[in-house]
Image (cartoon, rainbow, N blue to C red; front, side):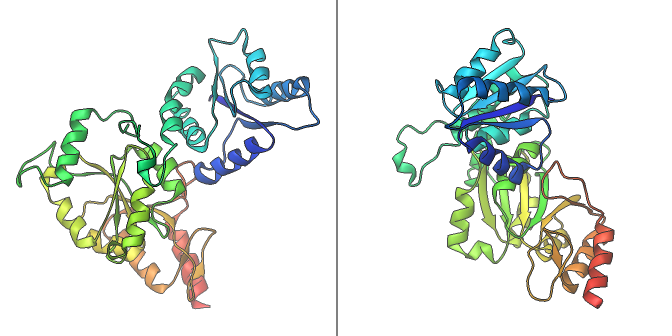
Length: 339
């Protein structure tokens, strides 16, 4: 695995490393190296070398640095000599860059290739509200980098209703790359780590309640990562979309606020084979099962009904987490709720 050194003036590197792990999970072979006022260039260089030594291998190393031309960059450059074919440096450190690096190194064992992959995310992470501030907005780039322009045009026409009813695209079946129950719906972990690992071209929040809340709908739409559109629709609309052959070019991530909403969609015929249980917020009357999940009796009964539909339930907050056993969680919930 490519080792990653995050280098900065002050504790910026430590803070962004912590933020990255909050979103993507704990990471192996990642070190934050910081420069403080009482330290000189040589001190910083020694820290860099110690960080590299701590990795399982120093063969492939990626340096993410805050500022071009500063002391951290200069010292990274000095140790890069002789390793230009294996090591790489990218400056302008931001959180989208770091998250993309975590995802890219799962697919590539070369630091230079990972460096190439993260550039688009680093640039696309700079956005404005209102959007009119940015009068030089670049063309959108899809998250997976694989959707060609024709596929994108077709998918956009479908959403706008410009493709005649009855048209069959692809095999005529929408592809669900992830179906997830998450009280928070579209947030950092979903918009980054899950999107990077599943490569949707559309995020669909499915909720009767949220679809009638214009404020929340607007916030969700704005939270979509670069190159991915987000929509909020009622459950009935999803059931219709699932049967519409015009959506055959769509790779969708489904987000449900509650297991009850997910069950309604499944009972309506939506072809969900696997359901990710990410978070269920605690409220009065619910038993705390773990740090992310709380259930009441209705939740337990609903999840059991979902399992009866031969849907696999995978319990994890981020892709790198281990799957928790849903049956053990249900047993724990019943025990706590009956006491």
